[in-house]
Length: 496
Image 1 (cartoon, one colour):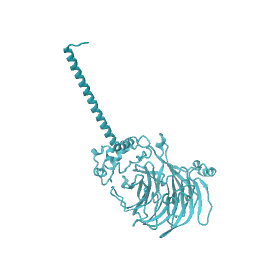
Image 2 (cartoon, rainbow, N blue to C red):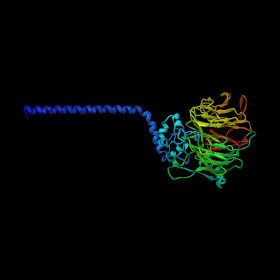
Image 3 (cartoon, helix red, strand yellow):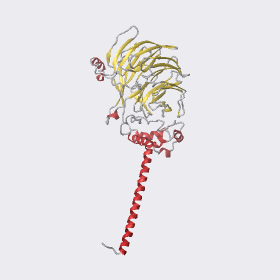
Image 4 (cartoon, helix red, strand yellow):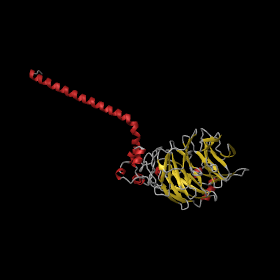
């Protein structure tokens, strides 16, 4: 088809316009692609910075309705007052806080978590207001109840002797064997401790000043009278509808009060519960940690707790706002104990640090530092103050170390040490006998008694009977008996 000159000129003009339009669209696509690539790279560069915040925000939103993710430090879902870790809430004492500022309190808690600690303390949201905010998220999910010992327990003990191989079918404290008497030491009896967790860092055995044994087996705490050899009962979670992971929470630490009337229980979900064993009822559920409560210790009416995140909290259960002080340790805490004179607090970390803190526990500040620090080759889990030399503290090394040491807390110097060639899992002073008792792991899983005459440490005898490592030790009030609980799920009583 032939075009006249006028039509051909018009057609060529249209083609030029079309080519220009296509060029414009190509330029727009090119520019948009560059922008997308630039922003994509920018997001990639910021991924490492924002991913954990987004992860933590999503987990926090779902914490009230779903179970905790594995190895994730979350707030508890139990019937407790809200958690009060430094990095999330940054609370201050109620007495030191200004009047509540409602305009600030309506802010998102996640923004508080990102703020610097000094800024949080300056803003000073009160504990009461944080409580009201967190109470909605920490909805009640689980209750604890007291159950008396059943009368058929004696029958179950006899049945347990015939089924020693099926340990999980036995009742707690069912008698398995009554041992013979030797010239030096009497192994009184061996009993069942089913579902005792093989956790090196837990502290789930203690004896009160009245001779009542508290032993945590899974998510329950059993009380057994060592004088009458009778099971008194247990504290256990009440059955609730819902997923199983929301119903159970194993106990990670426990501690008797000095008068033997109250028992404090810490769980792996961060709860701290205080029970009156005379009235068989829960007195209080204290503000909890965001992680596993590894250790508990009493200083008269003051309770101190340590978590796996390295937080130390001090509570006075008698006041409306029980949290009266806090401190931060760099590594996770696996042991905690006040000195006999209540003037020093010792904390052992998973990274081998033994820290000694002074008795001034009031207030919340990251600037507080231990007065002395002693370095160990491995975790300081086995630890205890000497009752008659109140500035001396003993520590036991793990499987990489195996060294038993006695330290002077004032000078931070080791004054006595001996290599046990074995993992030291637990440690207990027997004050009336003036000796030191250690529980060991590989290779022999024995209980060893030591005499300490400065500067020497000498083993006097060994007690064998456990087939796996001896995780926990306790002594009765007059130091005439030692109680041991091992990873073999056996509970032994030894006469010294």
